Structures are given as C-alpha cells and as structure tokens.
Image 1 (cartoon, one colour):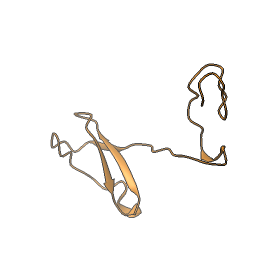
Image 2 (cartoon, one colour):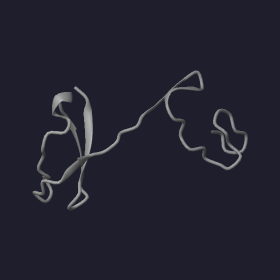
Image 3 (cartoon, helix red, strand yellow):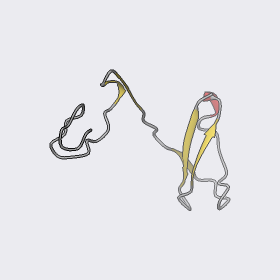
Image 4 (cartoon, helix red, strand yellow):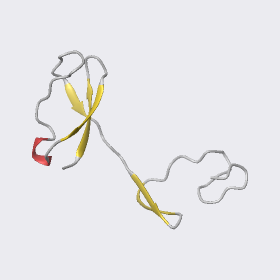
Length: 76
C-alpha cells in the first residue's frame, strides 16, 4: 500500500498514512485539532543510478557553479 501525505488546512499539521489507493481521498479527521479539512499533498520522489537521474527531478545543486555530478567546489 502507498504512503500518502496530508496537511490539515486548519492547523497546518502534516501526517503520513499508509492507505489503499481506493481510499487516498477518503475523508480524514486531524489528530491534532479534530478538523476535517485535510488535503492530500503532492509527493515527489527522486531516484538515480550511476550518477544519472532515472526518475523524478534532480535535487537542487548545492552551489551556483554545480550542475550535478562531480563538482570540484562543493563535492556535489
């Protein structure tokens, strides 16, 4: 079963839940404030193999001269 991320629109509490895909958008109650306005967040992922991105998008480089891979100034 997938892990879904939700945010409460009332108190901004964030929670991760393991739920069947058919229940991804089923109503929830916030454990923190009792509110019923929880919204599913867009979850993104990133995977790489051999230094190349194979899924998702590459993380933000750590310095302005870095384009990913081997950067001599920051080691990224």
